Image (tube, rainbow, N blue to C red; front, side, top):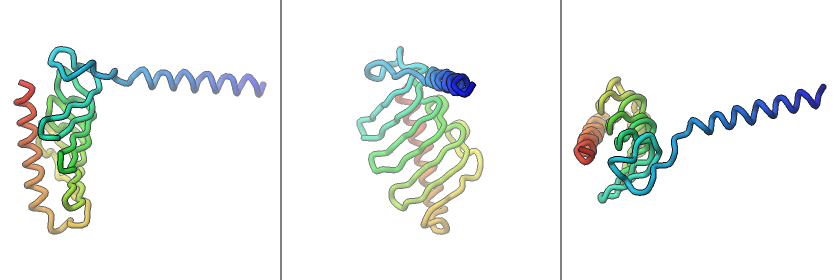
Length: 145
């Protein structure tokens, strides 16, 4: 009886493990291409040194992804059509702050929570950085057009 229970548990674990693996998106084929980078995971590096690692849909950032600047700041979160959309976290390299909140269509959707060493003095900087990120998001959309 004990042997049967162990065998049954192992079988269920293997089935669940293979099911989780099947939901992962495939790797994007070759270099960035407007026609075949859809429903896949890939890496795109800009000439400026900025890099996006994440999911693509119809050649756009869409789903979960991480965008890192040449200077080390980064956004980790949800994307939709090259825009921040859903929950995300923006980390600043310069002062070690972290901004956690929701985004909709590339703009702050709710009041982001500032976490970090310069919380009280960084409110204005946070607004500037978020505006910069929104501007860059618009530039990325122009790139894809």
